[in-house]
Length: 359
Image 1 (cartoon, rainbow, N blue to C red):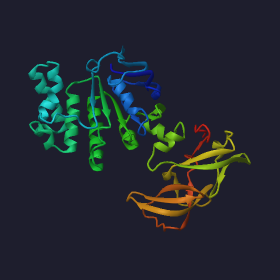
Image 2 (spheres, rainbow, N blue to C red):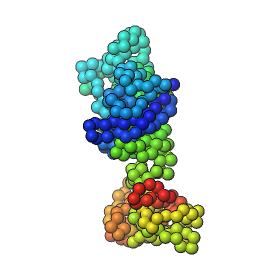
Image 3 (spheres, rainbow, N blue to C red):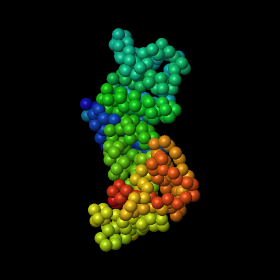
């Protein structure tokens, strides 16, 4: 078994705390993604699991073994770096075999493992090539292959796709997902790209300032964010966050501000809200005006972006810019005023002080 457990793990660099009291359990065979903006502590966390950074406080376990003082080479992990870290003077075969040779693995077993990994990754015809002769995607496959041949308990990926172009990123993302499905190896993957996090992870840990804000399956994180940061970080385009006033009218909660007045359904009006709140509405939860709609937003259009599958409409609501994702065939003119219906079942309400989710 290769569960990875972090118990109250803290990492300090002098007076700066990079990771604070992080507790997380990663189940055997699961794909967990650490996601967040630059400087949030996700790579530091990965490097502590790898043994490349010392832990200031807490414990890290791989299986039942505490590995705080175990050298990286003895942790039975394999790490894939952002820059591939291939030896330029070695061909693909020897790059992939290098770790096995250091462990004095028999030559026949090395050859078997390298060819199995190369076949799995579709690079068998590149085994005699040097890294300089390969494309970015092929180099990344070699780096992944070098990890696979070791048959480790845990794979660690540090933003492995960030150097690839957009089309190749999508392709490699799919290949990594298929690879995990075949190997079922416990995997921890670091990225700042929330699309990668949502598509790859069995569970995702959203981090900010060294603290995990939410650790949950991707869809749960999207549908039920713990706080305003998670709500704004997960989703593309980002959730619209609008200051509003809350009041009770005839047993229903009414949210209002310049440009909108929204009466929540009775089922969502049972909780008492503070007078000042932040309304969260995802761009895809705004649509054209519906007859007898309970809640609409009036928007002055400033920019439109045609994406083919959707039309993004940006506009100003008082002093706040919001974006709506609409039917791509809808005609919207710059400087026009449009009315959008809010999906009352999926909107979110946050406390402006604590930024925690209220509704």
